[in-house]
Length: 298
Length: 342
Image 1 (cartoon, rainbow over the protein chains, first blue to last red):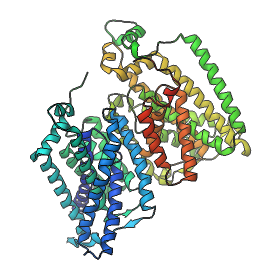
Image 2 (image 1 turned 90 degrees about the horizontal axis):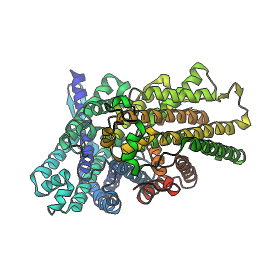
Image 3 (image 1 turned 180 degrees about the vertical axis):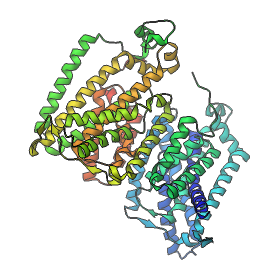
Image 4 (image 1 turned 135 degrees about the horizontal axis):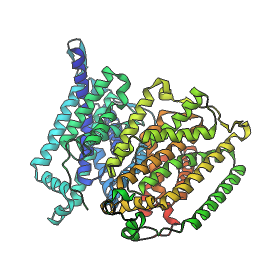
């Protein structure tokens, strides 16, 4: 019984973290049709920015609870600084090119951002320990869980709810859905497509940075945090179906549970359990679990 | 590309050629082209051998790595000609490397040429079951499925202690046709072997690119459906390209391991695969020589920048890649290959 609870809770907290990162990736793919390798770099930027902002907050004698606000501000700062620069300064020159070539463009961006992060923050690890203790801990049976992990689950629910509400219940969201469906037709109906692109890309980057910022207290922030995130979040969005928000949620749950099952039952499989799920889904449902069938263009 | 799949028996070559003639180079008369190609390959190999003799040791090593890695990208270019890009060639690269290392360490088989062939065959054996599956995939799905497979391989290699775990293991010095390689010349001899095999592979790939199946591949890139209507099997062409690419990658992996003396799970990590695609995109799909030029460029940039600007070499690579994609969309090969077709 205890083992089952442990697996479920571990899987759920890991899935929440995955979802926050992957939902941004899937949104960017849905709107801009770019599978963004640099998403992991923005995640890393968020983590680094959070480390700096929380440290500043501490020097300004902010109460520890305000470190959560500092982390949120860090994610906003990354999105505001990087999104217009990347979308207007780089990506727009490549729209309409082959999807795989666009992956290469973001790979180049990933390489560039890796070094930029190192130049700005150096190679030494940063620790953001203050927020981790804020939520206390929770005793369930013989197990103890850190409250922060559950806060992450709450954050994932808020993010998922907000993205769903924003897309389905607001004017801007409906315009975005129109662009996702067909940018060309939306444009002919008078939609300013490039504005939607900037908006969606900014939100995508904000979500990546948010994931990074709120993960920062749980890890040591150092070069290399971006590399591991990328393929895992790829797995999530591909399992769920590229461009689908519900898919990202289901994909995150599947990957989270698969990983925690592997960790607790067959540790050997920890590293590749995720990719086996991804490969199997691709084999039987290449469009992902939640992707609508698309007409083949001749 | 056989007539039996086609109810109306149309001879193979004319069936494809007219429809795609505008996009394809005209098939050259084979005999003359073949002799010219062999002569060119021999001249190239003689030049490389002479250069290796006078070059300092670090430079021959760099060129050995460039040729070994270039073989992997050569296979990717073969797939790119059909419009698909694999993001997981690290899988077959690692298969070749590990097969070589295991044969050497566990079975005591030390012949360099045999080990190289074994590496290629191991990669081929690994790739064959996946080829029919992957041949149905295009674009981003092909890229991500190959990526997933290579990451499974990475996870396996990391966790299997019999395969050295996360550290991998070392490989000793190979022999060549029963001859123990002398200390002072081992680097040069492995260089000769690597560039020799790379030259042969380049010449063979060029021949394959200009063959009927190679032209079908090129036509698939233009319009898959029309190729099917004309009676050619797109899936078979794609599957064969994948297997050929795997063989190239396996041979490349074996050669790299022999010169490097070490193999590790990172061979199958996605960043390694990314570098192979990087080289293939840099080279473009028109020229086989460009692949090795691009691979050398990558190795030079990597070793010089990591020596002189250790913190910004990835930055330089990224900017370079963006520049090539933006301003040389057909790769550096397009600088000296005449543009044909539309």
